[in-house]
Length: 260
Image (cartoon, rainbow, N blue to C red; front, top):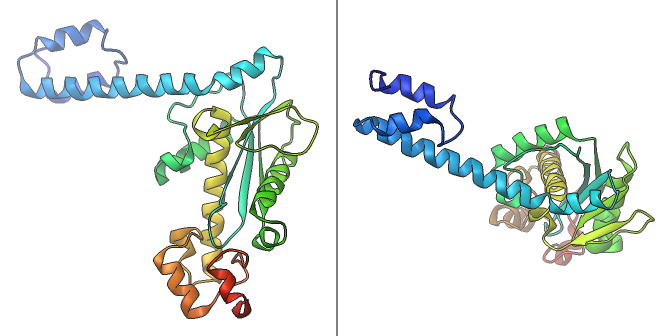
């Protein structure tokens, strides 16, 4: 391989998926610094890939346990948007196939915007079924954020086109007859719940961008309804809009100034 150019070696490494490949041992004998640099980068890539694989396997244990109990249609359920001052709380329910494999999937809060959207596309492509449920700001004010979260989750479950046999839910329970398991920090511990967290996050973020078009004073497209400096300045200057949660401080103190 020492007769190969650095560029040729770089291309060859793209066809190798293990440090145990005999070609790697040959490349280690190459004295060129450029080759050593390529091997270091390749080793880091393989280590990262292995770490993502091991993480995915670890996050699949709740699903494996459920299937061992003869539950095959397992829905992960999670929500996004409990804390913002405006917009709905959004929940998703996702049933994944038994052979689902998507290393890199994790709690949506840990993922970049680009990766979230890539995973969202792949989840929708591979999932047995995906359901999404909203609970509006008005409903949040009427029944409180905890109950509204449960409502959004129930709506998401009801949107599935297959009836789940088991629910894995992030730190919540819902009413109904379907067996369920509440998992603390489930979005970082279960692939099904992580998938639901990604779907809910992407759907809600896109919804808030749409709301920014009709309510331009609060920078919803940037803050997703959270209480950032720009958002609070908009509240101070223009008062709340109908998408704001009047039961949340500091919106509560401006309740008489709601804009359409």
